[in-house]
Length: 543
Image (cartoon, rainbow, N blue to C red; front, side):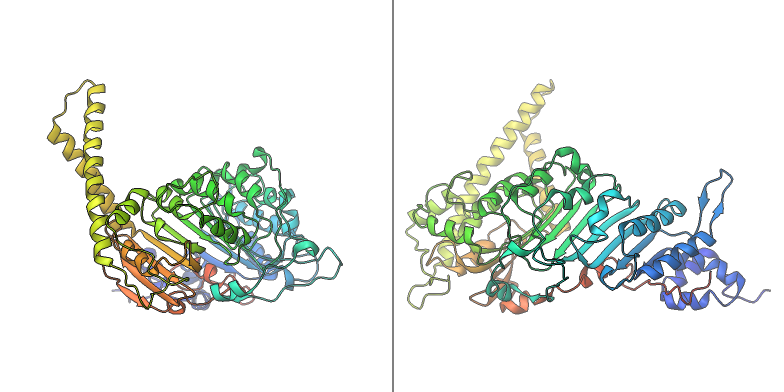
């Protein structure tokens, strides 16, 4: 009987054992023997991380040395599936950090591994320098996701490179920091920046893009981009942009028209987006998204102006989505019903995020006072909110609305059956409608629908109560989680639809801890497989 050994272990079991080892350990294991070296190649190269241009050159050389030809004459190399390139052009010397060199090395790897999925991360890159400035003239095949951590780079007023300091922020710091004048920076809305990424030829397999820009100025200039210049957006599923001055309303409008498969959109502190343009964005994009994030600068001039104009609008009158003043809360209520996840951080929010016009009228007719808060929406020392009465009125009204909706759905179901030449009993039509409702309820529970709402300053109308927001969140659809936070009141709570009581109450900073915007650490960690780093040091790796 042969003695059991690691070398004699079946490949499937060997791969399972190797999945629990670090990449450094696998590299050492590959030196044990020729047999183990052959067996360890699959787990060793299946997921790789390369952290600079020098190691990328060594990696390409390794792939070239191991290249073989199959019976059909096709060239193949290591069984590489997932490659993550985390590169910092600012520390490279010579001509390595250029789009030409980077494109050729990525093309070489893709030629040897045609099914590879490459994730490209560029840290501390500048928008108007290599390699970003030459994306449009090169090809980067099999790059699935692109993460750009960019800065202003060269100022227009001089040739000396100047980088801004990394910003550690939360909403408090963001509120205190004012926009810088962008007249002397090279970062501004321009078509070349976006067409270089989304022209469809430079990154033909791109699915996810994340751009994190250091804080900069803001511009409202119109940018004209032809539809044919953004062909690459057809495959984009996720787009996340933070701070980038290259993005404004005209750029975003052109982009969304070319992105039919976009399901995940994040816009954080984009100064070039006017508050009035956000209404078009919400109505056009929100119903088609599965995940939407919108963080608006707390001191946004446009937001403050529209809130001041809102004082002269009767709260019991329906708002006009296309009119003025702009009011985003009812738009999120109407167009975000089927969006599983959204995270909004707005200077001003209010009860109209939950209540329709009819529900607000019912509360007013019941003689229930809702203007019982302070100017910021806190608890008034004199008046108290009648939460039980508000909940009873809203529940009763929604029950009647649901009954009317149910009857209309039954009639529509029976009418559809008659068009097909079938006769359907009322009970069967009611069963179909009930099943549709149950399916939605199960979907909400399985997908864990979550809505995060943060208020940066105060409520849309003075003297409304933030406490009422929590009451109304508990009346939303069953199993939907609502996370509410008010920065100035330093309060946050988590509510589950169908439950009148919060599941957790914390301070604002505890619920929304400070985040570091100086690197891509969180996103890079998300790209790791199995929670461990698979980086290879090609100085010590044996071919």
